[in-house]
Image (cartoon, rainbow, N blue to C red; front, side, top):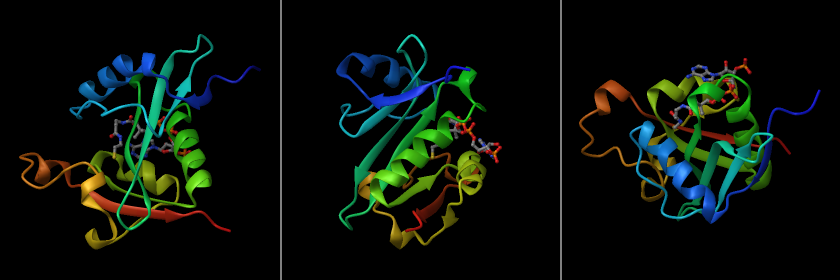
Length: 144
Ligand SMILES: CC(C)(COP(=O)(O)OP(=O)(O)OC[C@H]1O[C@@H](n2cnc3c(N)ncnc32)[C@H](O)[C@@H]1OP(=O)(O)O)[C@@H](O)C(=O)NCCC(=O)NCCS
């Protein structure tokens, strides 16, 4: 059976669609498509993406990973995150509460707030949804 999706670097032409995916999740639009990898369907259309940002601690952070809702549950988020982990060796992020189970399924564990660089993650300070969202800093190192 042909693969449902494949990964490729994002192009400028993808940005409007990726921004729409962000908007649907209440996230800011992407600054650009640098360090963005998409999962594309058989027609080459992005059905999800991961954006990485390098923190001042030298560690790559996920900000964000988003899968288009009809495509959730097919392993797209796992493939994007696992690929990024293999590329970087270690990933950290501030996970929205609703996504903590996703990261746990991939073997991420909770870490301290000091271990994430808040300048490259989703901003939680001052967010009126913080108690409802219950964000959690998380990390995983790729086994050698
Ligand atoms: C979180 C998200 C990226 C997951 O993408 P996905 O493609 O549906 O995930 P996958 O199909 O690859 O799932 C991988 C594993 O995580 C589990 N999982 C996925 N979403 C989950 C959730 N919300 N809670 C608990 N477990 C979850 C799956 O059951 C699967 O486990 P398994 O392999 O043991 O069966 C997607 O739901 C999404 O885009 N959410 C909105 C944006 C968001 O919150 N992003 C995270 C920002 S921190």
